[in-house]
Image (tube, rainbow, N blue to C red; front, side):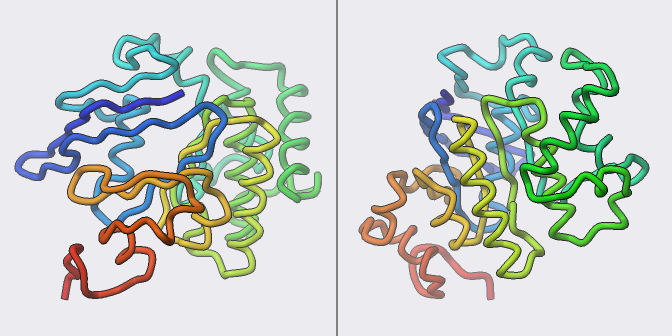
Length: 248
């Protein structure tokens, strides 16, 4: 579904991506791990076209994303943002139905509301939540609303940016289970970036380790613990000593 070939991106003297090569098969869940500042978010932004790579090629279904018609291209994606990124001035259902109320995916208001309530139900929220505002919700509920919004337009590809950040372990487990179930049900292709190894084990079919601007290792999640790769081993076990320099 998605392929990155020798993708480079620098911001001034800071070379963030130094030749990323990665293949994400259709209908599979890829989790990208790596330390802060290693370029995980930049990689996603490059795929979406929010950041233009300095060189390299990104393909979606074999087509160069740089040449894609933007509205049709973006309509294929859903996104769960790290901080929820809900609009404070909109009700919950209006947040969930945001894409359905405007642009190429526009639906009649009543239909958009009905879809939003169904997606809220899918993530475990009752219909009465629909007319509340984000400030009236807990952090875990806000994350569920963000997940409902990500799936509202039935996207083919869903990105999850640190989906469990700021949640307690129990709610993080609930969100991980929801993501796994929804991706499986929809048959969607998923890319998640996270530091949370519990999320990796719950969500991933495949894992990619990004460090020093390149993919140091990629493979099935079940091979992760016995990869023999020193970067991956150090990261997943949280060791201070190894090829990844800890900031002291």
